[in-house]
View 1 (tube, one colour):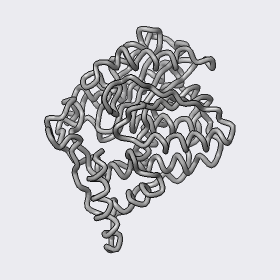
View 2 (spheres, one colour):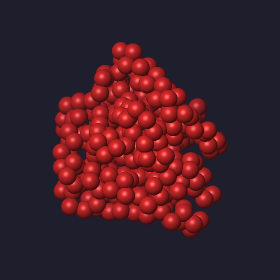
View 3 (cartoon, one colour):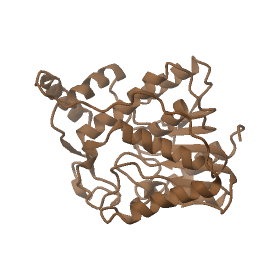
Length: 325
C-alpha cells in the first residue's frame, strides 16, 4: 500500500461525503451460531462438492480451486488455511502439503470472488461482509468433522478470517499472520472514517505495483484491487472489533507479525489482542524477524521462496506443538 496514494484518495473521498446517493457498505449484524459438527464422511463430501463446483466453473483458474488433503479418516490435527487478499488457494498449497505430510487433514478454501482467470476483473468491488463470514463459517463447519483438534492459519485477509474464527467459534487455535485490519501507518480511528468516505466514491482500481502493473507476480493472483474491496476488508476487521466487546470463543489465538511489515498496521492488530486479553482470552503474539526487505506476503513461495525455510517451520510448530491439542 502506497501511503501517499492512500492519503490522496482519502482526501478526495472525504470531499465526496457530501455527494448524495453514496454507496452503502455491507454489514454483519450478528455472530453466527456454532455449527453442529459433521461426521467425517459428510465433511469430506461437503468439501469435495465445493471443489467440484469450482472445477466446473470455467471462469476460475485451476490454481484457484480449493484443496483438501485428507488421510481417509479423522486425525488428531485439522488445519484450515485461508489465503490472502487478491491471491488464491495456490498461495498456501506447499504449506498445506507440509501439514498433510505431518499427519494433518488440511482444507484450503477459496475466498469468494478470488481466483478468476481474468486477472484484471473488478468483481472484488462487490465483495461483501456476509460472503466473507459465510466462507469462514463453512470452512469451520466442514473442518470440524475431519479430526479432533481444529486450527486455522491465514494471511492478510485470511488472517482477519482467522481472527473472526477466534471471536466467533470455539476453534482450538487460530493463527493470524499479518491480518489486514488497517493499512500501514493509518490509525484505526482515522482509517475507518477514511474508508467509509472512500466507499462513497465510484470504485477505483489500484495496482499492487504500478511499475509492472498486470505483470505483477504471482500470475494466479490479481495484480491489483478495487478500492471498494479494500474498504470492505477493513470493514470486516471493524466488525471483529465490534464483537470483541465480549470474550472470544476461540481457545487459543496467535498473532504473527513481520518486524519488517510493508502493508498493514500491526499496532491495530495488537489493540484487538489487548481488548481480547482484557477479557481473559490470554492470546499471544509472535514477531518474525530476519525475513529480509519490507514485505507483506511471507507465505507465497512464488514471490518469497525463503518462506519454506524461514516461516513454514514456525507456523507448523505453533499448530502441531500447541498444548491444547
